[in-house]
Image (cartoon, rainbow, N blue to C red; front, side, top):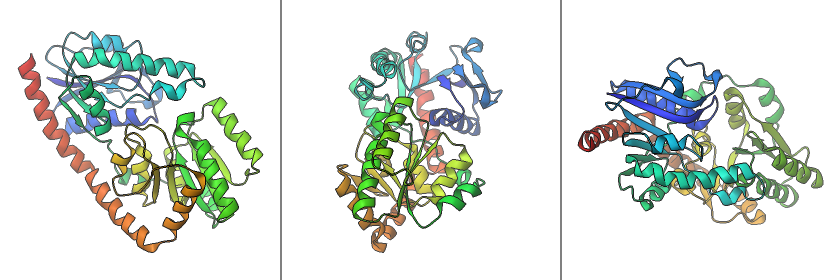
Length: 359
């Protein structure tokens, strides 16, 4: 018996793609024979253990674990696979967030939610990126659904080589607020600009917003127009898509992470910021409150004045910062590799029992 992970697409810097590989390492550590296949495979990954679906060789003796992230024609293959599967549901962004600004993504998300129903019918066990995701699966009738958090290994972040040019330029005494994620409308980088604008004009002019992530072209143009209209060219940095070393350096030079996204199935940057011991300010959407726990400040609204004042008051309070630091350490321990590994060990034992029963 092998544990075979299947994904529609695996790319170099994608969080879900990294998770597949880390999970594979855990399976091997548990003594299982494993395989990874992708319908679309980024050649830059350079891992001979990962193959394309043209080479798929799964049999009735193998457990197939499918990672679902969006709508795609490949989902039909999964729904029609002749044996029941295990599903890892990374969550699908609600289509409404792409209406009128990204019709291709809008269609994929609608398609994905429809296809999810068919895949659930062919699933005997599921993991979700969060309880938020599992609740959606249970609503579709899949009772065997359990959260399995993303695997974040602090030492692989903290041991990176920092980019000196970034450190030299941006550790200049300004308050650096960082936002990490895809540049699409529902991630709300535009609202972050409004918050920093208020902070600059009414609290302290020495503030800077650093926006990290690949940007959708039309949305990026909107953000640049905002920055120009507000004359904030020196106050907003568009870092774009970055390397791991650059990402770690941006975390290092930042004073806090800001997350205003309207939808998250887990949100890895929240945990990454905790690894770098940075305060987190995050809007209460999707799985965000679940991911953060008590280790950050959960925002119930995003009104610029209110949010800017919360950031100011929190960062000015040693008592609040110390309490957040204590809670960050607790949360990171809960999400530690060893804790996730022990859960995977227990879950795989249960999965193999269910697999034998349903054969």
